[in-house]
Amino acid sequence: MPIWIFRISTLVAFPFVTYTYLGKDWNSFLAGLACGAIVIAGEVLFKRMRLIKIMIGCTGVLLGLMLYALISYGLQNFGGGIDASIWEKYHEYILIAFLVFGLLAALFKSRDLEGLSYKGHHLKIADVSALVDGRIVDLCEINFLSGIIVLPVFVMDELNRMTSSKDKLEQARGRRGLDVATRLQELKEVEVRFTSKTPKASTLAEQIVKLARSFDAEIVTLDFTINKLATLKKVITLNIADLTTALKPVILPGETMSLFVMKDGKEKEQGIGYLDDGTMVVVEEGRKQIGKRVEVIVSSIYQTSSGRMIFAKIK
Image (cartoon, rainbow, N blue to C red):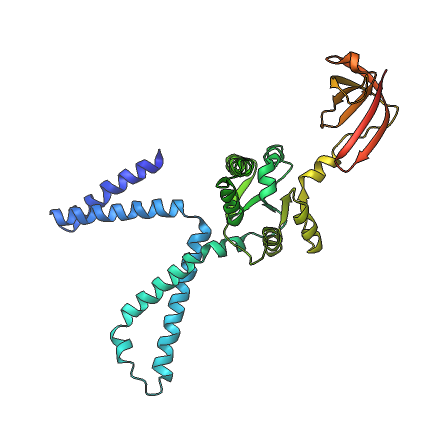
């Protein structure tokens, strides 16, 4: 509400001052109204622009001014017979041209320069696999992942490309990744930033790792290739799949647990149940207990490439 009071007051005060003190005519009134509108437009513009962009724009203006001063000083003192009459005649226009050039050059390159204002391990770069998986949102909600989540523009472009694919599964993965990116931006627990900095590399994995190295950041991923490449480049990776494996409960032969038997197994009289983390438990003589929760004793545990498999008996 106070911002609207400020805007209305500005539109009223400027015409009143110009009409009262500059001349009681329509020209003074319209001039004051135009000044008020310019002030409000500037307020809205600066409110929407991030501080880093304003600073980059001011730096560009200063560089343009310094370039103009350097050339002007050189012509006046080291011209060596060069006719500087054109410079003297149009120096005001040349100054404005240098200032505008510096401002535009800085703003056009601001996307690349923005990322340089953030560095360190508080930056977490999310790759395609982390966004498609979606568990990064849950980790952020419970404050397990803190700092700033960085979403590279080339990762978002890859997700957009996936949504345009003819493969229905790839389409669904791309849409899920974009939905997860949107959910991340809605979270209050973490800050999300985009960066358009795109390192030159032949693969997406190399781009992710190079970007992380340039920002001294960590990578949130489930991609095995990125994980190995980042290890070679000495970049820290936060692999959600490894985290899930590490958090699986430790179960030893001889332990007793409560298990809901869901279906029958491949072998005769076997029943199948699942732990909370998705680990499959094969229950001997458990076929008759399908649909019931029973107490079982762990008899053996097998570790396979796809995960654990537990064998148990009815207690």
